[in-house]
Length: 103
Image 1 (cartoon, rainbow, N blue to C red):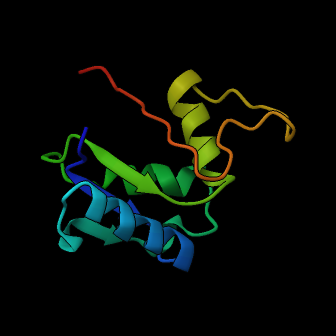
Image 2: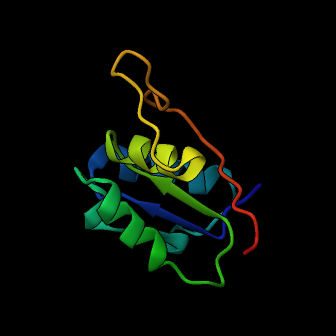
């Protein structure tokens, strides 16, 4: 499944991952949006980032960092469940696919 848009942290590792992933998927580099808010952030800010995405883009690949992405995944999948540190949902280089039902 090819995303409509990649939104990535500007951190070197995340930005490099976004560039490599877009190339493998045959996407133009212009389809990557770097957002400073994704770096070292929390759930509230990530929800703002997601809410501001264009409605025309249905499949978004978000590339960033923990603990923010893990918090977002927990919120999206079970409305805020939390896990202890030793039971991570998103280890480094993990991909999570979340399908949100039409409202």
